[in-house]
Length: 70
Image 1 (cartoon, rainbow, N blue to C red):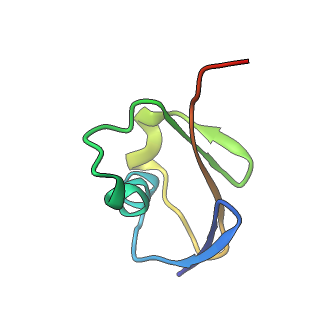
Image 2: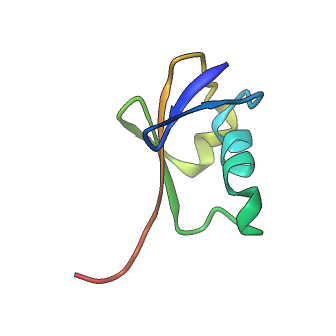
Image 3: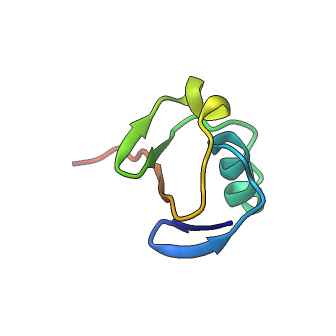
């Protein structure tokens, strides 16, 4: 399926947000999603719901990392 992830079209085999997060951050060698947030079609999805939130063709996903500062 084709998604828009952080403004770029991506093809993915991921079926839910948890799988997508792992696929998108695999190159970062992270052990935990701590400090990250995901919005699906403009709605923020809680981390405990990532595994249960399915994604479908055409969805818009924003994966952001929280940063401190002002």
